[in-house]
Length: 193
Image 1 (tube, one colour):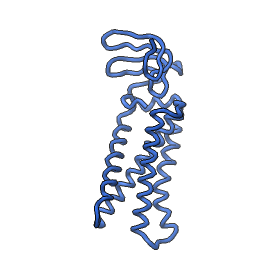
Image 2 (cartoon, one colour):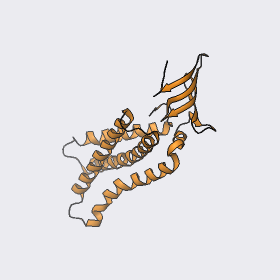
Image 3 (tube, helix red, strand yellow):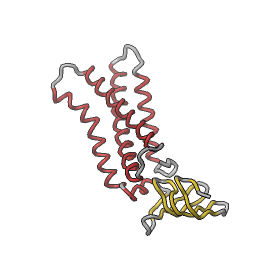
Image 4 (cartoon, helix red, strand yellow):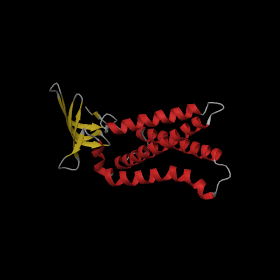
C-alpha cells in the first residue's frame, strides 16, 4: 500500500497503535506492578486491539480489492495481524489475572472487546471502500468517469491512468512538475521502458 497516498488519519492511527502496543509490551517487563500500572497497561492493550482491528480491516479490504496474495503488502498485513493477536492474548491474560473466580458471562467481556471492533470496522470498511471505492481513502487520488482510470497528485507531479492498489499499474501518463512526461506502460508503480 502506498502510504503517501493514503489519508493521513490512517497513518496517525498506525502511529498511535505502535505507541500503545510498544508501551504496553515494555510495561510487561515491570516487576511488582501497582494496580494503577496494571490498569494503564490494560487500557493500552484495549486501545491497541481496537486500533489494530481498524487497521487490519482496512488492510484486508485493501488486499482483497487489489487482488494481492503474496507480496510486501500481504507481509505487512500479517505483521499487523500478529500484533493484533499478541495484544488480544495480553488482554485475556491481564483480565484473567485481575478477575479470578468470576462468572462465565463476566469472562466473555474481554473476548467481546477483542472481536466486536474488528467485526464492526470490517463491515463498515467493506461497505465504504471495497473495490474501486478504496481510492476514497486517499485525499490525493480520485476516480474518473472511466472506472479503470485514476487521477493522483504526487509531491513531484501528477498521474492519470490505470492503478492497482494505489500503485501505477497498466497504461498511464505521469507529468512531473518540471514538465517532463512519460506516457506508457506501468507495472507495480514503475514505468516499463
